[in-house]
Image (cartoon, rainbow, N blue to C red; front, side, top):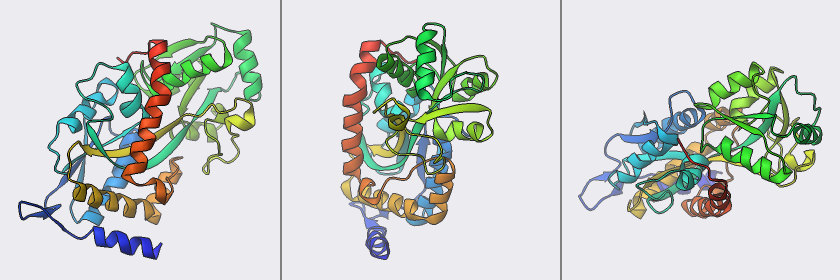
Length: 322
């Protein structure tokens, strides 16, 4: 770790630009495409604060909301490629949106990847009065009540919508998809028992699971969550390879100079190595990528693979954003 931080420290020195200035010489903006207080905003603020320390300049978080995060995404795509405007996004904004919305930018080609910063599998959860004791029983119950079981989603074209359609396809039974304007109101109705099941970010659901207010059947990943080791994986619970994670990354506009990208990536690496940052992200149910997964190249490859995985299903299902 000391060797790593020493190497990163070299990159964190001021980078001279063609103009004669050094980067960064002023405040940076991190565009969060969702409202303040949500998971993406919280993650962004945790990382931005530590990045600012590493860069020697403040990184200001700006919430630019609407249209499933695509308004904020467009703001970053159109920004000057100088490293001063960055964007945080995830599976929804940088994969699903490209298939579910008519966009004026390309979710892959119009951005320079900086680093993946957090991975958050979903939980398959249900109202606490659902009779199923485990995931296998839940699937039997859904099949026995096909077209009657309701699944809350955080909006048309959201990752939870994609997960619900994916679930239908895998088990061979339809559910009633009930859209909400965000995960918070969807969770409220699940808590009230107005809907039956939900596929939700672990970070959002864990507090309710810990309070025994809802049931958790599985985590949609190949390994258990460090923050909730008692919840089985989908493989263990009987729905093999039903993997879906809300991974977060940070991007710059296309054309940002490579030396600036290197500096920004180094600041992110230092931030993710910070013990307090790691504690806060882990407390949120986030898993921090391994060091070798914190490179621009890794994010680019992972991003491309996710597009190839999800776009065919999204388009075949006719999923559209709102």
